Image (cartoon, rainbow, N blue to C red; front, side, top):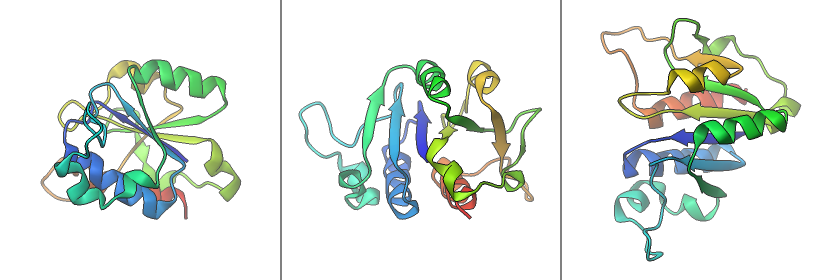
Length: 156
């Protein structure tokens, strides 16, 4: 399973996702758009990132790409199933997805910006839009927490 992070702003969130991705055995993380990289332009580790990643960026392969949409289109040609994680009219519970171990090699899960989420264009080209049901007053979870829930659920 691979992960696409679309315009995530927070270094803390991205670092947290890397750490959880390492634990979940994620194959690769794509940092898309403005999503920050673990290292600055001089190659120095970013303290806010490493505070929560605890070095996971050295164990989980990653790559920065400019366009999430272009990457999704490429992955679809490579026969990846694209699961966008977002609350939308046509989304279904993440619990409704049942995969076999062999399916995990060709799954890409896409998480969006902390405020804006994923664009309608990305939701339209996704194979499924999954959401985590919310039972309280708040409408959503932190993106790092949501990532952990979905990544581990899909591997069950």
